[in-house]
Length: 285
Image (cartoon, rainbow, N blue to C red; front, side, top):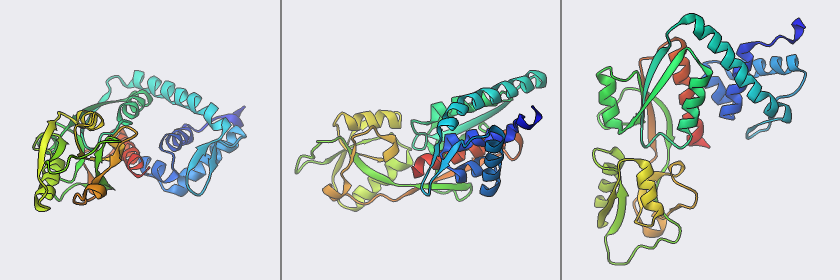
């Protein structure tokens, strides 16, 4: 039976590949090279005697065996980490702030899964504006923040650029000779300030018809037909359209997502690396 013993590190790598859908992002999340990730998966498949992942030039897809094994792999890692946590006593706490314009719909499931898989670490999330979260980080109230690049800040680690557009509900029409109705987040939201400045510079009259407390509220206002909003596509429900070119609105730049962290080693750094890789994957999908 010894030749069937599983390498837990290889199992954890397989789960990362499955969840992130990419060898490259799994390597980033585990702070390893892509060749190392591929080798660990190959050895795991050899141990199990079956192929877990079907590799294609554009994406990674689980095989039928991989789909079956995935839940068992998660349960195995959960029990392993629970056993270690019982001996270790108290859990480490990692507080992460994520900008409302960065935290997409995939975030709750991702954090829940990360907390389940690592019983040594308790991850707490705070959502807010980039400016507010950076102030909390500077006051040591948060261990890590993932935010939009903020005016006046040149520090942090670049993660990925995300494209923005002027989105409206399908079928929405702008009434001629009336100011452009815009749904926004309240100041000091950097995206709101940028969008307003671009409209003003282009000489486009606009009026704020909705000011919500978060991106979800702004997206709901857009889908209700109240007006347009400057948002990333992944933040919007299916059916929203980019109406910027049709209305002659100024082009919105791609906005960088930046990581600021004091997690430099151990489980906190591993969790931050995994979360960063997952967010990059969501943006690039």
